[in-house]
Image 1 (cartoon, rainbow, N blue to C red):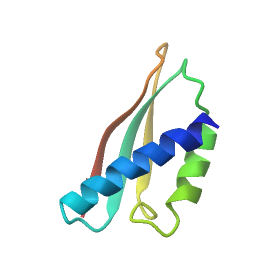
Image 2 (image 1 turned 30 degrees about the vertical axis):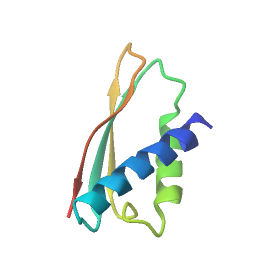
Image 3 (image 1 turned 180 degrees about the vertical axis):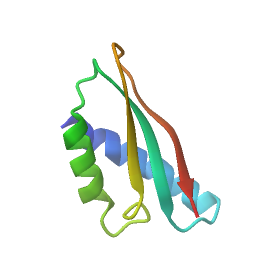
Length: 81
């Protein structure tokens, strides 16, 4: 369930950025996910899809780069229009 808490914070930060810069939608999100985190990639993708419904993130491509032998979960960047 770490995935849900991470995504709630992630969405909050991204949506604040959209509002500040008067953007409408997120087109892509780029994350790094370390091999040694307690985050499950499949669960993260599932909850991203479910939590983004009806929001500015709904149609965003969700890109995850797996990082071997590290314990990291990081938002690298996101694109918006």
